[in-house]
Image (cartoon, rainbow, N blue to C red; front, side, top):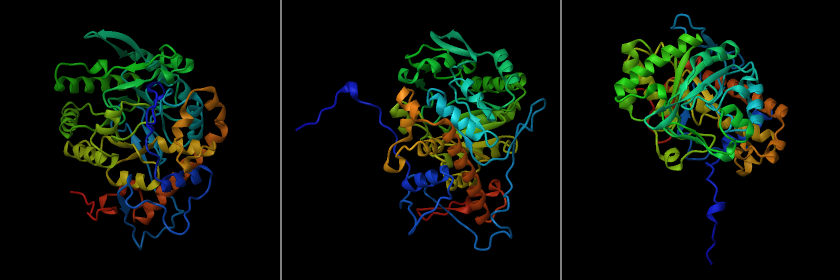
Length: 439
């Protein structure tokens, strides 16, 4: 007998859960315990998420791992009249917009990270994120939610960034440390839309849209509309300069790497004009905490964050910009070994999203070890909101962040380095036995 399913009841598929070894690490860390295994490794072989082994030294540096491994990254030190920001924490929160997750999770994660790393506001409006007091990356998406004015171009409604409103927001919030202009992300490069089911009244108010209706973002920024790629690159350079000038903050871009030729042309234009971003956030092709078009999220993009970061690092070096541009890695970096690989591939900073959702779910008794997705905790209905203890969640995500930072430092020491930024591909081996050495 055929088992039938009503089209009206069909829900989008939820991404595959993390390997149990990774979930187990996050759960134990979130509960304030040192993550342990018994009776051998619990890691799958082959590991579908992370194809690397870390290569330790049997005679590491003459320090104990309790001694601090040095880590310090300066954003914006190459620009005049810009307030630099010094990052000292090894794990930061990647963009999770209000709407993509609910307001209680936004409050809990921001509160938990206060005084530690950076929290990216995502593109959905910064109000709830900024209220937590955490050091923030203010992300500007194509819809400019809360920061833009509508404008028509080519028969489509776009949003133009209101520079005066941006400057006022920055002046009134000294925890805004960086500004990120999002060109694309791994889950949905070129298409961004928040379904109306995730737009309750609070989200609608912050985003300036109607409750229950899709919050649709244009496919690209109004500021970058131009007939040729070269003109688009020029406009991007000019826009970076304009935002930096009014905000007096380091300004960067976020992108999911697509064609390498496009990345090379863009970076070459940065070098020729002298208008490079202060940082580039590199997203993998697999990321995303909210909803996305399946054929895009599953098949579009250069690849995982490790290969993408390596390409960006190489292109920046070839253009003579590597010392000026901070490279941030974002996408499936939810345990310390993943972060170590990102640093070895050329990253300067690491941002995590879904790992924090797993930590939040673990301390709110979601059965993540049994395969229940943390996505269930992101919904906006009253029943879901009632299950979230904000104070307990803040403690859990902070415990995860602190343990993550400690263990990246431990692994760095075991690999014979005194800073994660000293790691390189000689510290890794792929499971297929090919040495992952720099070309």
